[in-house]
Image (cartoon, rainbow, N blue to C red; front, top):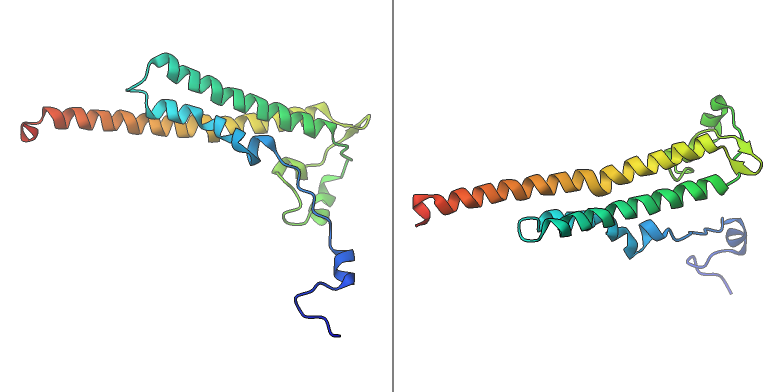
Length: 162
C-alpha cells in the first residue's frame, strides 16, 4: 500500500528537531496584561482618583520588575560558552537567537553565565519593558486624553454648542 503524500516518512520524523517551547509566564499568559495596567489608569485619569492612577503604575512597574528578574535569572542559570566574536557570524543562523543578547559571545563561570552578561540581559529587559509597556504607551495615552479634554472643554464653551 502506498503512503499518501500527507503522511510524514519515518526518516522525516527522526530527522525533525524536537521543538520544546517553554511557556513564558510574563509574555505568553494573561500576566502580560499587567504591564498595561497604567494604560487603563491614563485612559480614565480625568474620571478616577489620582491614587488609582498611581496604583496602576505600581502594577505595571511590578510586572516589569518581575519579568526582568525572570529573564535575568534564567539567563544566569544557562551554561554559555565563550565564542570568539569573529566566529559568531559564521555559526549563528537567522532566527537562531531568541534575542540579540542570546547571540552575543558570553563566558562560562562555574557553569553559570558571566554576571556582567547577566546584568546586560537584565538592563536590556528592564529598558525594553519600561519603554514598551509603561513609558511610551502611557505618555501617548496621557497626551491624547489631555488633548481630548481640552477640545471637549473648548467645544462646550463655544457659542455654536449652545
